[in-house]
Image (cartoon, rainbow, N blue to C red; front, side):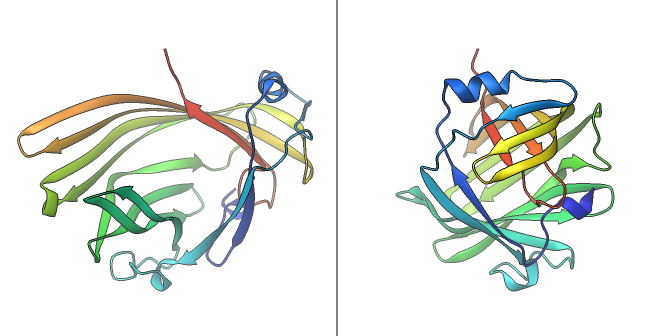
Length: 224
């Protein structure tokens, strides 16, 4: 439920690891009352996600909701004239869903908000084994200083295909597994020139009660 999602002032630590043959073998395990053993994973880097109330972020003027909070995803990203700083993703949770609502970033020192015109419902609640749901989303970022517009339009399908026990280097958890298929068209318009590319992403996420974020996530872009 929404009580198992992150909220304002949560500080959540995570580790990144390599994808290997043992991980791939566990990925194929599915069904009811199954066991996934990822105890072999070792961190190659670690980090912290700090969920701040929107009112206490650099973009408080643009994201005013009491249940809204932001996570700094990047201190700096891009290159040359396309350099962005203080990149935040903004979320909201309620009884029905957990969703992404927008992005805040600084470009040449100026704060720029970008909103979902159709918000991305990352999870719909309650979430239980056997659930299958779909939603649409649409996001646009305009950089008038560069005469550039970026847009992403797509669908998200969530399937709770399995439940059981997952073993990780940090503990053993009872969980459900959610497979998210995200199919989008990402397009860029510069002046009168525009082009779009399909982007198909798959996310495997093991969710446990009270953990606030997946106890394990494996994700990547689908090729061919």
